Image 1: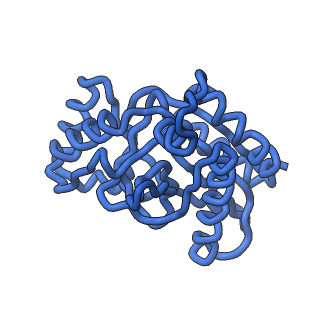
Image 2: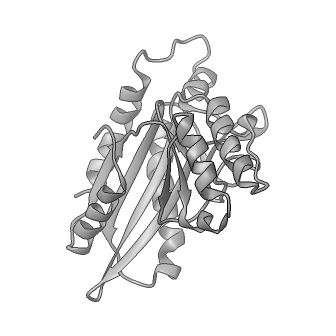
Length: 230
């Protein structure tokens, strides 16, 4: 899938409520995705209009967290599957499972990533994936989840956003302009982020990055996602 909208998320959750397990890799056009909680900002409409005029439309999502950019060079990994047990008790296990899948794929590329906070990154949380180089941790992926319950059944949608060869400076610039227009007080630092391209070069000094890095990363993830969807 090359692009998606919020309808796909609900379709996948609906399938998961019916007992199916879904695993998808997808990319999207340039956009900023913010949680529904951003409706509290009085300047939201004006900030969205300004971002849209710059070519970065804003979409509100059901999961929590903060502003997340989408666009070229970003790969999204979405899992939707039925779950038993209270969501509050299962949330950490869902995050840990998603991080394990993603870090396993990155390890196959020679990149070591661990879950943890990275101060200054957008949508920071303790279930980011970060890569440490020369003593400094930088965020390479972010995660989120959303639960749905119906007719006594429940399912979870777990999502990760992986920076493959997107430009951290550009992503932060767009997110910061949006936050400034909201007067939210939030500010993000490009130095808090990294991407697979940068980490590949660090892990393989003297070697050239694969020409189609996105396809290379998809290939590394595919076996793990196929196993998840069984």
